[in-house]
Amino acid sequence: MVAVQSNNVSAVNEALNEIYVEEEDYDRLRESIDLHDNFDQIGLAQKIEKHELLEMRRVAAYIYKKAGRWKQSIALSKKDNHYRDAMETASQSGERELAEELLVYFIEQVLTSF
Image 1 (cartoon, helix red, strand yellow):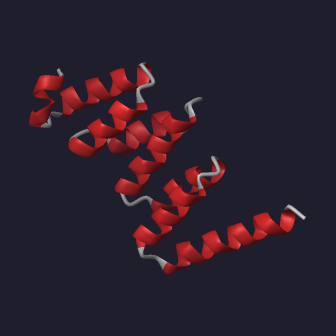
Image 2: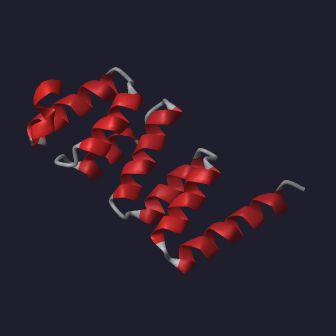
């Protein structure tokens, strides 16, 4: 299947992505997502956003970011304390409101830690 994935066929992409999720191979999953976009991106993100492996949840946030679902991506990144990912997503979104919300979140985190 890997040999024909370059054709970007949805069924092949979905099958390989499923295998990578089952094998918990987040590196190959992310590579597949980067190179082949013909699959149910949001469905995959929803499936793995609650995965037990942190890196799989991070892939879910990455998928949301690629799909322009900035708030969902940032929410996942904050939940897993991947603040750099959250900041990069807010920056990439170009939405001032998201950046301000994230800044307020960071300030609240600091204040509650005292």
